[in-house]
Amino acid sequence: MLIKIEEDEKLVDTNGLRIINSGQNSILYNFLGEALKISYSGYMTREKVKDFKEAIAHNSTCRIIPPNKTIIDPSKNQNLKNKPIIGYTQSLLKENPIGVLFMSPQQYLSEFSTLDIQIFEFLTKNCIAITDTNPNNILATSFDDETILYLVDHDNDITPSSTYFEKQIIKHGDYSTHNKNKLALIMYKCLLLQILKLQGIGNSTTKNKKVINYIEQEAKRKDVNFSTTEQALSGYSSIDEYARDTLQKIKKR
Image (tube, rainbow, N blue to C red; front, side):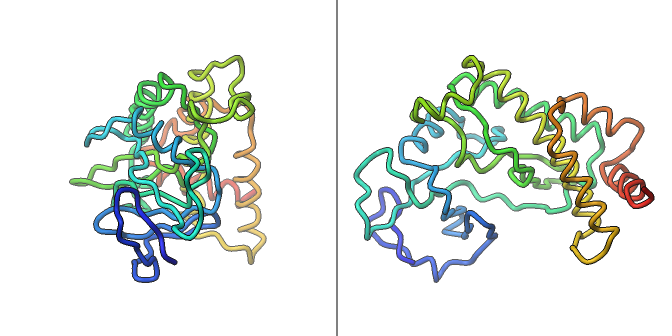
């Protein structure tokens, strides 16, 4: 697929790029030391990319990874600012897929506390609302045996350039409460995800179905807040210990 990256006249053929990851709605490539994301959701626009770039700090201490350059299909008319783009570039981080498992509860809670502070500073204050609570949007990296968590993938977020209809999901225009509630759910669902990672879930056995059903039910809870995760981790020395213990309890039901 031929694509055009913002401010670069040369076309890029994605067939020559190494795939980092792929999912139902996107493919992530390595492009000259950056992550290049091709998205099929149709929710990201040039104006939204601009909103994120203006709102989020571009430095090493920021745990929210913003889009960088827009990517368009050169074969189509992309003149309208609010017309969906096919992707964007962003900073490339080396993921540790099992990094969260080896965190202590204190480290895990502390990382989400940092995210909470930065979400308020960079998103809430700039009228940007989180909408996607997929726990895979939390990316774990490891530096000197310390796991650090980042928030990535903002395709579905509501920004100042979003439509009036889209902004109606923020009750009473309260971005602060909205984002806190969404982060609390992401925090809990990310914890549940570690149970699946530990098990290496398939769909072949009754035991596995028990675990899947438990995760799905818990992910739909409407009463999740930050205390939900704190209480779940109480008494454990690591996320791995919590996941193993919870897994055994589910299987014994």
